[in-house]
Image (tube, rainbow, N blue to C red; front, side, top):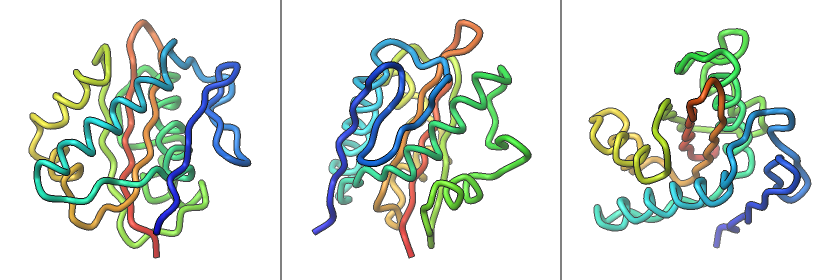
Length: 158
């Protein structure tokens, strides 16, 4: 059975066993609860669609948070990250060896319910959330310029 990882937020940094992420990033208050809500809403959608829930991946959380922070710092929603990196590059850099990887990004949604509803209304984003290939999930949220920037990374390891 796959091990689920627990998130905790301490002093503005998301903590996983053995890793500290997103230091110096403009994390919004309630980030931990928002990320848990997005995970729960995504897994509920998957269950309603007859799919297995996704496991939390510390490496994918790192990749997603990196992208959320990059978008907040640049004030631009994009799948292109620092140095032109793509989601696969960011997942690998975070230590996730993948056979499948996909990313959803969003900007301006005020909370978990709104961002998940936005992704569900977009065929490509919904397809990512309901991918039969995905087994792991990572999420990030960052504040910048009065907006929230969201990133979801879905994957399947090698």
